[in-house]
Amino acid sequence: MKTFLGKIEAKVDAKGRVFVPSVFRKVFSEEDRERIVVRMEADEKYLVVYPESVWNKQVLDLQSKLNEWDPEDQMLLMQFVGDAEMLDFDAQGRVLLSKRLQTRLGGDSELVFVGMVDKIALWGKSKYDEQFAVKAKLSERLKMLGSK
Image (cartoon, rainbow, N blue to C red; front, side):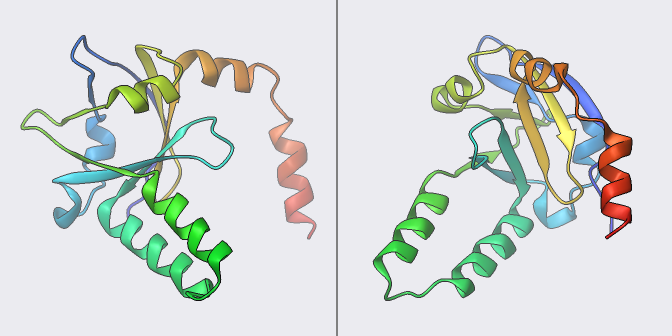
């Protein structure tokens, strides 16, 4: 399985388009090279970029865990799916970010793409820098996880 790795900075142009880094585009399967699905992460710090096939699997997995007759479960599914947007790649490998998505990224014209194995986190650079200015000690976290 190919994975999304690394961190790459990019800029949003005046029309709201951004190049999805080629190193990430190369990871997309043939079937996922036409469009992506984007939604706000649950804590609203960044956007999550899904290859369409990963999104479809994620939604089916969530739906299978919910009771279709439970109104709260249905509201959760509706909110999760309703918050998502499908974005098509243009011939140059760019996607057009809606005004809503740009606003959710803090209106920042500088973005940071961060690989998350099967999906990508998309941050406004200022929010990313703010979030990671006070880093938790990675080595300590990894040691804790390793001892479990």
